[in-house]
Image (tube, rainbow, N blue to C red; front, side, top):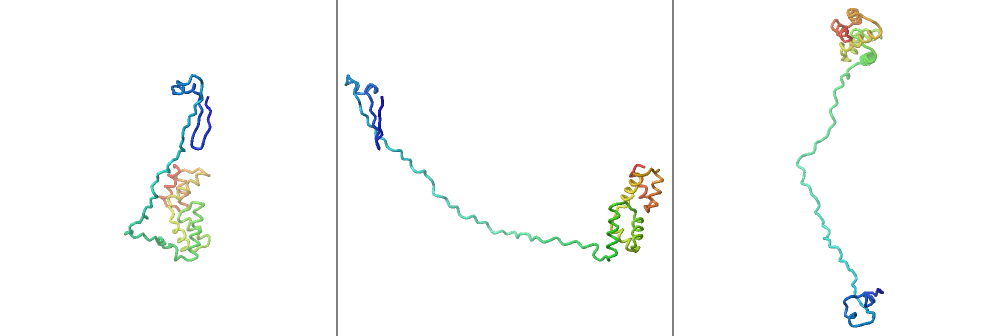
Length: 180
């Protein structure tokens, strides 16, 4: 049986002699005796962790830049192609653009439409030419429009496109574009 108590820096344990094998007390005493064993204990003291003093790195210095930084400037504005146009020319140009946005026209047909609207012939020509339209593409669009609501022979469609002001080559391209 072990009975013990803790002392501040010692540990005392009473041990019955029968419990301790091979001790001198066991061999000398024929009867059970109590042996007091005192064991001195030292408190665990842990050393403070070894740390290196904080390293202070010298400030990073960069060598001076020898390449000058590029200067960012705004791109030069492109010259306004319509800067010198009159109010009538501007309006004719806008009207021509609106017509081409919703319908296909030949160059001649668009000039005639603008003249019908009241623009002078020079303003109508200016407004039409300012569109830089692909008249072959316009012929193909016009041919497609005709084929959506009516049937045409190849020659009939070519004649209709020519009537609208497309050239022979433009009219033939329009007929070709719809498979005629």
